[in-house]
Length: 606
Image: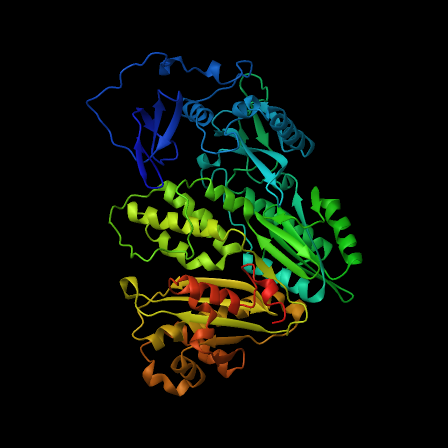
């Protein structure tokens, strides 16, 4: 089996046992480490046999007795038995145990045991299940424990969390689940809430819904086996009365349950972002941002905050963080009217995977990358890309272009791509102290969106990007390869005008109940594109452009948006369309008014 880390190719000899249940590769026995593992990067030697080594344990010595409490008797079919054995012996999560027995046998075993007991108490108190004799001809799903830790802004563990989850990958549509939809919020809306709170001096707190999914009822009949640590009689199973983590419909059930409660209290779901809720009463306003079981509540005054906190606590089990320390992995600090956002814990976790350390002052090396057409996904490469992408979307717009560029090679990775990824990680190491600063105090009530596009590129498809400032605070950014080939620079720049305008109007509709009407200004550095957008009569030069991109004409004519030309050196969206050097990156940081990157003190008067 091949194991690859950074630039070093490594492999170990193992014994092939079978195909993984979720079809993500094969399962192997490692005689050296005495454990099961999984991999999709494999070279099979079908005519060779791995010889026995001294002290090694034969596979047939691994019995259920050495893994499970034999006092817990339950019926398990052969496939599920093998799957549970695989879960027990594998260790994919660094820092946290992967199984119930690993947790209890770790040095933090007492804390993990207490977390499991708390979870089981919650299940019983909320009437999630009841034990019954196993009905005939029904599907019984497996369960397993998932462990995690919650960190504060300093990276210290503040809570050990244990979740009992159902192996919902075995559910059958039409039998034990139907609808699975549940909305998710955006970082753009979250940052906009911070900008509003900064401008109007609102109170902002975060909360965590304890055992969120356990509040919502199930419509389907679902049966599960007793998990490790729970005794059950022979031929006995648990029937679920409420949703449990891991079920395909659990997220949708929880969303519907939460929406009903919030509407009863007086919140109204935002039509543009149904994970955001607004409350109005007697001139007071509150905004609620929900991501599964984590929430942010911003209120116009303390009296309203106290009232809504009491109402929410009546219906849900909540843990409040009035100090505003973190939300969905983002560390948040408030200094009067300034919000400081960063992701130190995620960066440290990313850096721990990279051993080749050096100083990098730009996100990408100067070498061009090409596809090797291998058509084989590298999971470790993809895992790091995912971590960096989360970082880029939340607090680090300076690495947005680089991570999107490297993500193109996830299916055909070679040494050059790993080298470029390592360069990006070391750029993050070099700039790890950078923070996203949101301060809208005393700023004009407006919205400015910078849009830019390159021309050509890989496959002749241009790439465009935009960044938006709400009341002077950077709240949105994104980039995308254009869906059709642009015939000129003008066309590429013209098409991005519509994207920037649509995103700005979407966000402003989200917050219009608080900020009032704001007409966004779209800024482009291409005069021809601006003229075509302002003058629908110029269609003879743009008649070949797809119809969807002409929406900007209608928005300008109807005075929904303003258009302005900006000099190229002042085009802040340029950082999302191409790889820039150290000097230009720093100049863009400073041009943004010190809104991110540790230059706030040098631009405090701007």
